[in-house]
Image (cartoon, rainbow, N blue to C red):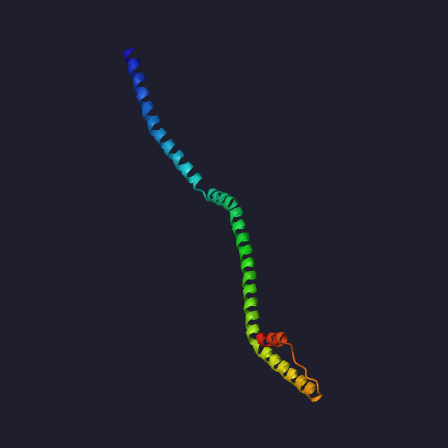
Length: 136
C-alpha cells in the first residue's frame, strides 16, 4: 500500500508540474492572443470610426456656426464700406453745393437788378436770406 500511495503521490506531482508548465504556457499564449486581437488593425479602424461618429456632429455644428458668423461679418463689412463711400462722396459734394450757392446768389442778384430796373424793388425777407447763407 505504501508503494501504491507513493506512486500516486509521484503521479500527482508529475501531473502538477505538467499542469503548471503547460498552464503557464497556455495562459501566456492566451494573453498574447488577446493582445494581438485587441490591437488588430480592424479593431483600430472600428475605434476610429466610433470616434468620428461621436465627434462629427459637433464639428459640423461648429462649421455651420462659423459660416453663419462669416456671413454676418461680411454683411457688416459691406455696410461699413458703403457708409465710408457715402461719407467720402458727401465730402466731395461740397464743391457742388458751393457751386449751387453761387448760382443761387447770382440768380437773386439778377432778380434784384431786373426788379430795380423795372422800378419795383424785390427784397428777400430776412429769414430767407439768413436761411440761404446758413446753408453754405
